[in-house]
Length: 260
Image (cartoon, rainbow, N blue to C red; front, side, top):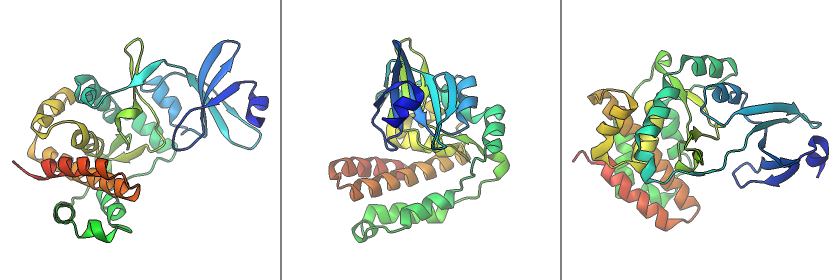
C-alpha cells in the first residue's frame, strides 16, 4: 500500500463513513491516523475535547495525514448520553471563545435553522409526505422557525450521535469525529442529543447539568431542533429501508412533539 510505504506505518482501516481512518502500528507504538481531518483538530486537542494530536504530515498526493493518541475505550450507551458528564462536555465546547475563534479562523461555516428544514423537505418520499405525524411535525417546524443572530452562535459538533462519544479505559470522555463542525445555535447540538436519548420530562434537569437555565425560549429552540433532527433520522432510515429503526424514531418524534 502506497500510504504505508510513504509513512512507514502499518495501517489497518477502521470502519467509518469516509473510509480514511486507520489504526497505525510502528515499533509497537499505536496511533489513530486519518486523512484530511479538519484543521480545527489542533484546537480541540489542546482543549482536551479529542485525544491528543501527535503530528500532522502532508503526503505525496497532497492529502494531510493526522496522528492522534490511540485510546482504548468504547462508545457511550444510549443511557449514558443522559449523564451530567456529557452535559458538561457540551457546555465546555459551546462556551469556549477559543474554539470559536479557531473555527472562524479555519473557515468554519455558519448554519441556520432553515437549512435543516430545507434538507428534510428536499426529495422527500411521497409516503413520508403523506404520513400524518410527519406532516404535523413539518408544519410545526414551518410555523415556529426562528432567526439566529450570528453573534449568539457557538461551536457545534453537528452530529452528537452516541458513537461519536469515546470513554477511554481510564474514564476520560472525548467527543470525536469533528468533520461536521459548524458555527450554529448551541440548541442544535442540545436538540439532537435530547431528542434522541433523554426522556422529555428530564430535559430540564439535563440542562441544569449543562449549566443553563431552562427557560421557555430555550425549551422551544431545543424542541425545534429535536423535531428536525428526528425528521432527518426518519428520512434517512426510510431511504436505507431500516423500517424497524424508523418506527422507533417515529415513537420518539411523537413524544417530543407533544407538549404533554
